Length: 184
Image: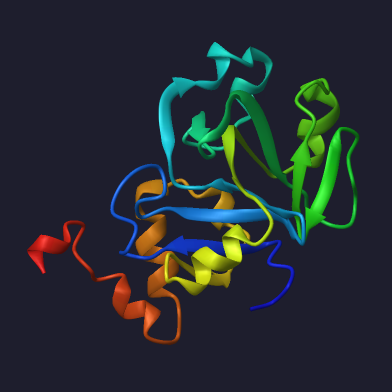
């Protein structure tokens, strides 16, 4: 397995049958020998963004709700943006490609004109050193390339199937697995 999986997607295998990671798609924001962190891209919550960060509500990419980024730090918010070109707007730390982390204390007026997508996550997914590698080896995750639109999809419920379906190998077949393995 590649040492640094930052910027790649973790797609849960049918082996994960419940919880926040069931049929989840995780964008890895950081991965190194110290562990990994990412956000679940396909878990919109009922909560509107303005319940916790009212200044950002009008600027969020649809659906404009909080997303459950993972089971760690659910009392904290993480902003993800897509930044066109080579600029790094004030309050944004570019991670890879056009994806950046947004400092949610930055006034929206300074950031919004410079970004094309904005999503806010409550919490994140985290792995200790070696934990993610073990989960991939044991068959819990498929590791695939991300596309720019994945993090800001307007159809998060369909993301798991869509990401698998676009793969050029046996993973495309996994997209057809029923939600309940007993139905197979």
